[in-house]
Image 1 (tube, one colour):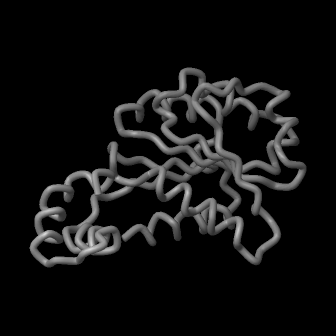
Image 2: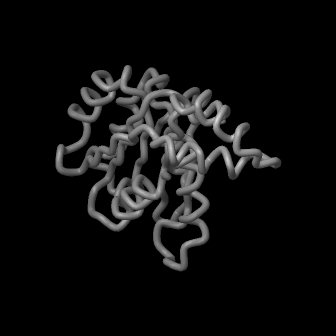
Image 3: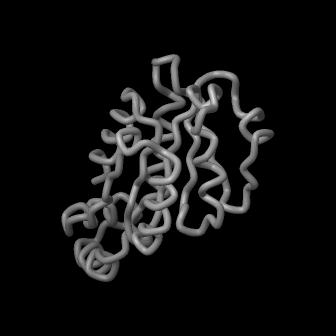
Length: 173
């Protein structure tokens, strides 16, 4: 049920854009999508953009951090960016820094951080360098498929009950 955001991420990597923002409410699977994307990138037969680095929100971003990134083009992922206090420090590396040409940044965040993150993007990144994607809720059929993939015993009644209990939050599945 998450092929669409994975496709959007693959297209972003092939584009000239620098920043991708994955928006979605808590529990929708933003982190899962990003980890799956990182696995797929690593296995990709294409040589460029194979290195994927995950940053933690407690991570201090500075020039030394930039120097520690792989020498090859890499994708930097900041999951749950709405928790990150100093997004400007991270985004400022793209301003007039030739080393930034080898970096693509992927940010995931909940809608509650949209104003703060969009403002930081506005201050640091040209508008045409940013791509956004809104993660949609899974359909009931997609949740049911997820439940079937997770359950060991696929009793139809249990599948139905678990689907109904978790359709608003796939993370609970």
